[in-house]
Length: 336
Image (cartoon, rainbow, N blue to C red; front, side):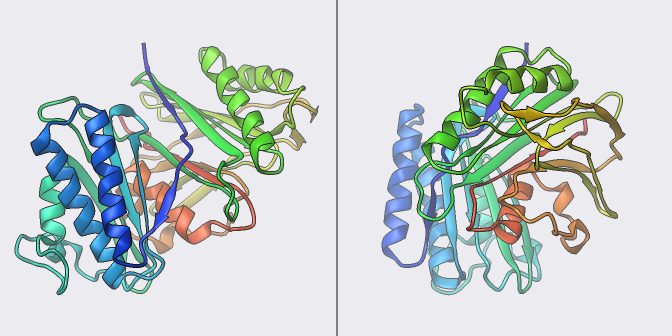
C-alpha cells in the first residue's frame, strides 16, 4: 500500500486589493465545508486565510495565494501565500503572540500559526515571503508533508500543460513529471495521460515506467518526462529522464544535476538510461519543467531545504518561474 500524490489544476489568486480578502476567505470556507469541517474548524480556516490575505494586500508586492485540497491528503486543506514583498528579518519574532503588523486583523503571524494544523514560513529581506499552512478537521489525520508540487499555466491560460504524480510507500517514493508539448488543453491531455500511465504501474523501475509512458503517448502531443525513485532507507535516488525536465539533488552547500536523454516521449527517444545517485542527509530532490529557469542557486536561500516541499516548490516557482511557458515544480523530502 502507498499514498498517491498528484498535481491539480492549481489556481493562483492575486491578492492586490481588499476585495480579494473576502473572495479568498469564501473559497477557503467552501472547501472546508465540502470536506466536513465543523463550524469551529471552518472558522479557524476563515480567520487564518483572511489574515494571510490581508497581509498580502497591505504589505506585499505581487502577492498571490493558492487554496486547494492538500496534495498528500484530500481531506485536508492547503493554503500557500507567496509575495515579493519586503520579507521578514526575524521570522521568530513575527511568530510570537502579540506581534502584528499595523493594519492587519490583529492576530499576526503567531495567530495564523496557532490556528493552522501545520505551517512553514521562509522569508528573506528584499526577496519576499512564502507561507505554507494546512488545516485538518479536529483530531483528523494529518498529511506527512514529504512530497508536494505546484503548477502554473502560461499567461492567462486556464489549464496547465505540465503535471506530476507520486506514489509514496514510506520506504520509497516514486515521482513522475511530464511537460506536455506546447501548452493549453492538448498539452494538458498529454501530461494527464502520462499521469494515468504512471499510476497504473508504479511498481516498475524508473526506466520501465518511462518506457511505458513513451509507448503510451504516441496518440498525443507527447512531452518531456522524468521519473525519480527515492529510497529513503538506502539514501539513494534512481532517475530516468527523456527530454528537458530538470532534476536536482539540492542541499545547503549546493546541488547536483541528474541526467536525462534527449527526445520527446511518445515520438522520439534514444536508448533510455537509468542513473543512480547518493542523496545526502538534509537535502531535497527537485524536479521541474522548463517553465522554470535552471539558474536558481539553492545556497542563496538559507534554510529553504529544511522547509516543507510545498514551501520549497512555491519559492522556486516564484523566483525561477517564467510566464513564457507552463510551469511545474515538485519537491521530495528524502529523509525517513
